[in-house]
Length: 326
Image (cartoon, rainbow, N blue to C red; front, side, top):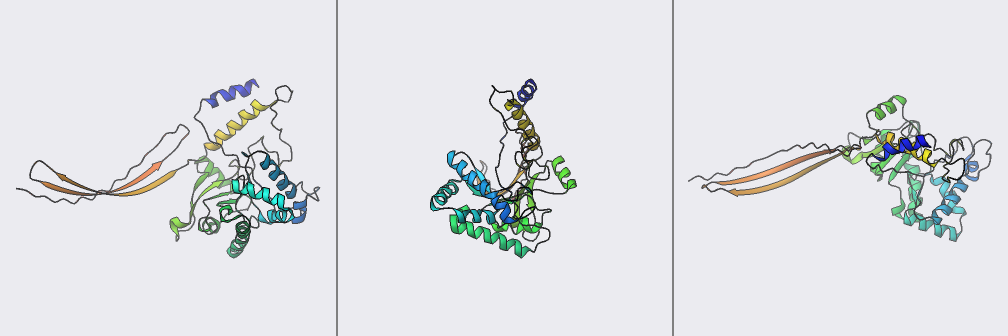
């Protein structure tokens, strides 16, 4: 524990860092097992998974603690579960959705492939899932974040047509090539603005980012995976009276991972403003000066861990002079 405390001390001196932990699903609608087996939890000798148990546990856990949040993705599973619930459970679930504790991302019937499917199929399956959400819970529950964690490759069609053009504010995805991943992490561009359509321009651009720990997939940082490795990583033990007490060690490891990941994105924001100004000045001499000023301001903010701001200003001036001399 002494080593963990030595790690925590210098980290505590750094500027505050906001960390977003997103509990979410990634439920294959058929991979190693059938859809029904994944839902019910049968054939676990093939793959340990039960989506029904996930939803039952999530709804119960959220109801116990209002500060908890959870994100569900695949509507094929959710609609199956929803059809099995009685009125009391449906009412409890509606309250969780209305309060924002239970939210949907992506919201299609499944998390569709992007490499081999036709774009019409991508549209149809997304429309089906969104329509079900809107009919059951209202338009405000329809997702505004794209969540493409597991497709093997990502297309401009997804970024443009199924993101910005579909009302999405952001698109997060995993599984990119090793070369691209290495370049993005080194250049601090793991989050960026994806301008996917030259013809549609800004109307089709979307904020995009890599998922997980920016490792090319969607898993948590090393040492904090209690799902996909099926219990290989140690849980957090916060009782100091037991020999397996490891909370300081786990906290130090989490902070190191969070700082490392934060250093792999620039969080670049660019604003362009056009300000028309008109000024009239009269000097002591019999001279009248009329000035028309058009100011174009391009502001680029670069935020670093030390909260340093870099400003770039571009000024365009148009002058109209009227002189009266006597």
